[in-house]
Image 1: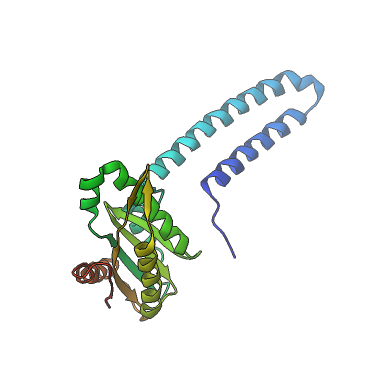
Image 2: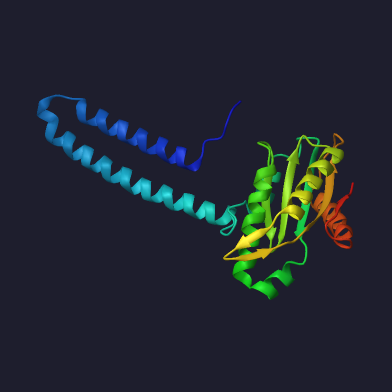
Amino acid sequence: MRRKMSSEGFFTTIISIDLFLCFIAFFIGGAHRAKYQIMHVIFIIILVLTKALFIRGIIKIYKEIYTDILTGLYTRKYFYRKMRSITRILPFSLLFIDIDNFKAINDTYGHIVGDWVLLQFANLLRKHKRKKDFIFRWGGEEFVVVLFHTSNREAYDIADLIRKDVEEHVFYHDGIAVKTTISIGIASAEEKKAVDIEKMLEAADKALYQAKANKNYVMAGK
């Protein structure tokens, strides 16, 4: 299976190539050209260092745009970027997840505890993540999970496992124990036709709205 190179791997590869070219420049040629070779090598080293700083800057900007700073999950912006290229992978399902009564947690225990609940919840989602799935922090206490090669029925089973896990979990921070639940709306694309991501999100959001009427509930939309 072909795997995408990580940003760190890409960075290392580019620098390694530059250093390899640097050594070639140093060793090719006779002794009478040594002075010019050394100058050439110094020039290449300067270029390598400049490129290294530039690439690291680009990687940092990329991560800041597409990675949520609190949870380390992908952002909503990355969701739209990712989904442009994968809407033909059918079937797939979306889970739209909302932490129940999250405002009450913030109001009762403060935003620091609230942030820890978000972080620990993100880690719970990671525990259920399969290799082909993607998790996004949508905003606030809302999250989206993309389940590839997953039917509506299968998505419901996965969502209910997550719901039960959160229901049984105790969120701890600095001696404070918090219990909460989640509501989940599901939308799926199973037919072999063009997929409208916005309509899927709308369907998942509608299902989530119905789930939140009961709280601690999973609602499967179309």
